[in-house]
Amino acid sequence: MSKLLLIESGTNVCSIAIAIDEKIAGLKESADEKAHAAQLTVFIDQLVKETGLSIMQLDAVVISKGPGSYTGLRIGVSVAKGICYAAEKPLISISSLDSMTHGASMLFKSAVEKNGIDYLCPMIDARRMEVYTALYDSHLNRASQVEALIIDDSSFKERLQTNKILFFGNGASKCKKIINHPNAFFIDDFSPSAQYMVPLAMNAFANQAFEDVAYFEPYYLKDFVATKSQKSIFPDK
Image (cartoon, rainbow, N blue to C red; front, top):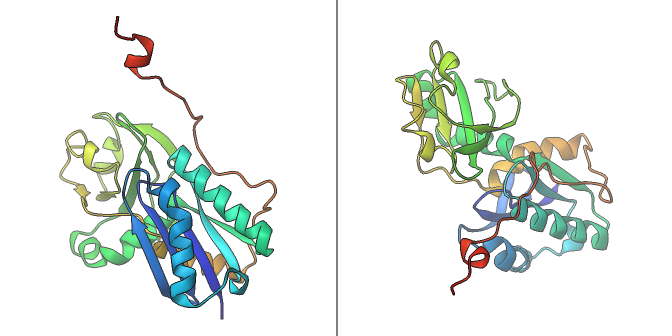
């Protein structure tokens, strides 16, 4: 019986779950702006108490490795590594886009089949008109490279000529008006969740696909750029 602590912190949702084998024993989530910093460790403590498990009884800690929010990934990975060090537990990392795609394939299975969708396209908002994304085929195999893509009216144009694509995630809604094609379908109410990591995490655990806790780093995809507000640059006189 495998008992996993799952942490999804790479997106706008702070989501924590405990899974026993394939079943979710507990789930805590928040989409509040600063939930990763304020709620992540609180959620873990609450789930441990509610499920009656201790950290020492867990078999592994699972973390979303990105791409996604620089701050969210950094916080999640730091907490996960701290638990792994303290409790001497293995660390498993799961691609945020892989997890989202598995979740969407379950939630929207009927819509995918009804509309003859050829590809699933998760999108994580990367600010302005940029998204972290990749294409997945009907077998959930990655059909394109993971990239930070700036969306314009030519995006996915060639693929959409002969294929139907389902776009989802918090980066998809802002792209709807730009990717304007009859073969483009959009889901507006999809939220990433730690529970979608379970099948991938269980498979990784069975195959002992563990990370080196000491050297593991999130997959940021692009460098973090700190910005200053206009107010700080041009103070009131």
